[in-house]
Amino acid sequence: MINFNVPPYVGNELKYIEEAIQHQKICGDGIFTKKCSEWFEKHMNAKKVLLTTSCTHATEMAALLLDLKPGDEVIMPAYTFVSTADAFVMRGAVPVFVDIRPDTMNIDENLIEAAITERTKAIVPVHYAGVSCEMDKIMEIARKYNLAVVEDAAQGVMSSYKGKALGTIGDYGCFSFHETKNYSMGEGGALLINDEAHVEMAEIIREKGTNRAKFFRGQIDKYTWMEAGSSYLPSDMNAAYLWAQLEIADEINEKRLRIWNTYYEKLKELKEKKVIELPCVPEGCIHNGHMFYIKAKDLEERTRLISYLKEKEIMAVFHYIPLHTAPAGLKYGRFHGEDKYTTRESERLVRLPMYYALEVEQAEKIAETVKEFYAE
Image (cartoon, one colour):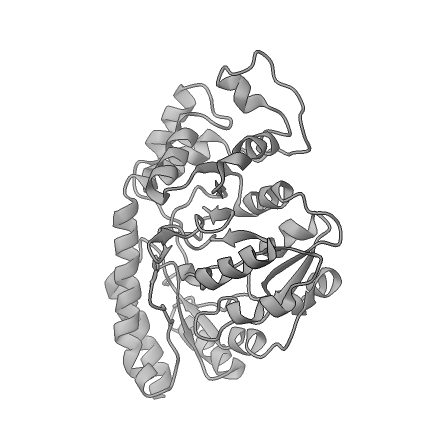
């Protein structure tokens, strides 16, 4: 059986977890948490990076930093994971969903402006499959209407847009280190803060609303409750697991891109015959091989393809159910404009196995099996 996902493991994870234990500080902000944060700040050219317990919590922190009030609106695509909306719904804000582009599955930047009202406070672009949204246009709209931009870059670690790392273009960026991501700590995430003026408040929110971070840096002699916050610090043992992968981040990235390119080359003939569609990477975008998907003709064909692959012991899956069609989406949000592509394209998409331990030969076999399905 070829699994859909196998969490990354490179060999030094247990060694570093043991080191974290030996340092007798396994709670948040230990030595490995600091190593990881500094690595991201250096490699992403970010002002400040704070590791969190999940990307969901990183996004919740962004919502708190924006000081959202009940009734405020946040524009986002409906084709995303529930956390993108949840973080803002938790503050009483209304997710306003707009349609996606069929080529990248990202928010259609040309539909954002029409969805803005006097209640709009932020735009949340989601970089699907590690391929950037059209950030120049999005940032232009945000500046015009004085809106914040929170990049959901859960899938975008090591991806870039016109030379800038995803997560560093808007006001805030959110990474995920869930077991399904390119780099993992089991459960975990990071908040990227691109304006130094917001760093102190972010540290307070992350430390249960206290100025504890200042205390541990020796800047104050005691810490106290300053603001509403929560406990968003991951264990240093989780960070130790992540650090092992960051040490060989380029190697992991290159391996995933080899697998991605293998799929693309092997399936290109089906694309040229207009049997399936393959991922699109626009000019100026560098992706990270996070995901490889194909698009079948329709929902019925997709269902048959997934079943066929399963019979051949290959686990392929579909992805999100659009949020505006879900019970919570109907309750808490609204869709602006026409759902021209979101539902239609989501029903066609099939994700093929993609992970660091997958071998190129296995990717070739999977591609050949897809071709066999269409030959039959």
